[in-house]
Amino acid sequence: MLASFLRSALLPALLAAALLAACAAPEPPSPPVAGAASPSSAQAPVTVQFIDPAQFAEIRDHSWESDKQNQAWMDDLRKHLERHAAHYLPPDTHLLVRFTDIKLAGDYEPWRRAAMNDVRVVRDIYPPRIDLSYQLTSSTGATIKQGSSQLRNPAFMMQARRYSGDPLGYEKSMLDDWLRTEFKTD
Image (tube, rainbow, N blue to C red; front, top):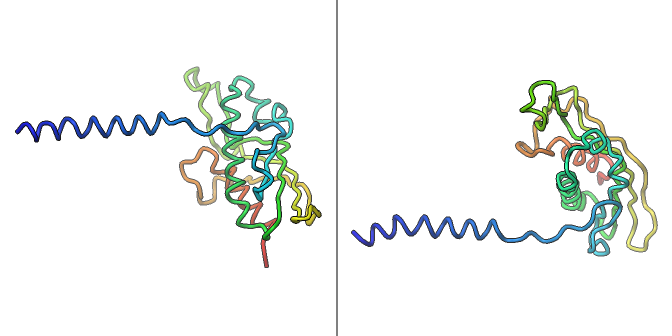
């Protein structure tokens, strides 16, 4: 009976302690965002820069959001591109992507209620927008391809969600479509 009691009381406590320890582990530091490349960009096939993020429509229109909140979604988009772009690039190449403007899907509608001032409402009248420039170079540094793109998807809510539950799912889908279109291999 004592052993049964110890198992029923001790096991959940040990699992809770292990979960708390895992959650408390510090994340590795992220590189600075504004115009800076990641420290390992020499080896990485993709470098992402955010050019003058204070002028991005998303940050300019929502100046009450903290720098930490803005940094979080920029880091998420940077990590997404670093992970996914390599699948579309030829071997021994490097892609530099410079974001020049970003407006996330949805917007705030504070006129609804005071309690909803910080709730992003995603509706078809608030489509995501991303402006970027890019340069694909060979291992010798020769430019293979360069240009700029304005990513728009006014029908973003009518398409199947690739990243269901991800707050940046619409933006990530647009970036995936851009990579597939711009760097498709024959």
